[in-house]
Image 1: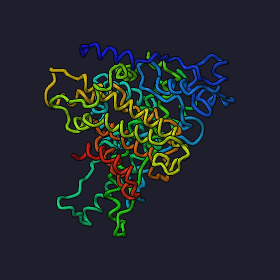
Image 2: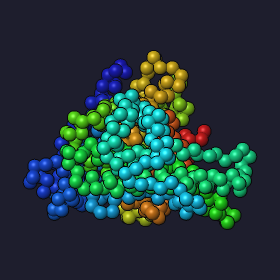
Image 3: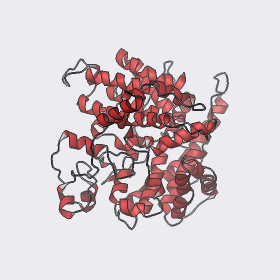
Length: 493
């Protein structure tokens, strides 16, 4: 039998018939004949109208199908929306743990801009907007469509300036030799505090305006709400690199202990991100006809890898010129998924309290399974992209950029929106404890750490992976320590 015949047989065996039409909307949306965003326990439409919301029961197969298929051309999104972007308390401002300023800082005022704000606006137009995407078409949206809306909507201007402030903040490295003098530390701390007070002020002002617009979401204001969502998502990603820098540098001035404290994991950024999909689904037709249609198309966000036999992805050879980190990832990603699958298969009963899979989890089987399915989809999309990226027109550094652009086009960055509620609950935020779901989260973080050419991702998730590794080493759980060796090796080898 030829290789082509084997490939075709594998494709026929692995392909599955699926549908993208959701049949799991709430009763009220069905009666009104409108699209339901399927948020649990109250969908977005019912929340906005203050109506009772109830759902029919559905099968496991239906739930799995709905969870992994969003609107055509969009990244795979989870059908269960958190309450984050509905009534009341959310979206919430991210906490930067800023010290009280020792000297007055520039105030953030509504309806006016000072020289600091003008500098941040200039920075966004000259640099930030040109580095928000590896796709030329999406980059043009950041350069033109979003700034144009900010001239008419003050809350968007605040969110834009907050994002520019994170990009403009110089992350000061530790001096050679590992010594930080008190003068350097005090100067850095003062500069950080003053700058971030302005950034957080814009972030909070923008959030308040965003909440007001979201409460009246319709086709009339969906473009500005979507623009605000995009700015919030970018801010959430970019906040990690600044907050991690703050944790590692500012703690030096306040620490009196001779032993290093356990690392602090940050999960609040995930919750801030997870409302974007609700806006998209509720106003999908209007958005696709508006100025953001280019940013909504992700033709690579498919499960086409399922058409091919596993043997094509067990070890994927990265093309010459590819990033060494991506090359290491491709050599071991399939095996890493297999090891995590073995951890799941080795636990026959969810009631087995002694199993490492169940450590620290109330509902380990469903949470771990949901996270692992999402992780497999993201990893296989990356492997699929690299396997078929043989464009001989690109050479040198252009190869690495092209692969990362294809990864972006495959919506690899979109996994925070697709996390299930059970998986998020299993992480135990804010009291994160070592468990199997945390291993999966570290592996998901690795998919973002591969975007070395994207400023708001570069370096931030390296720190988070190392924090998780430190947590497991402190717990002494050999099973989890072993599972963390591969992502750490991909980062540091």
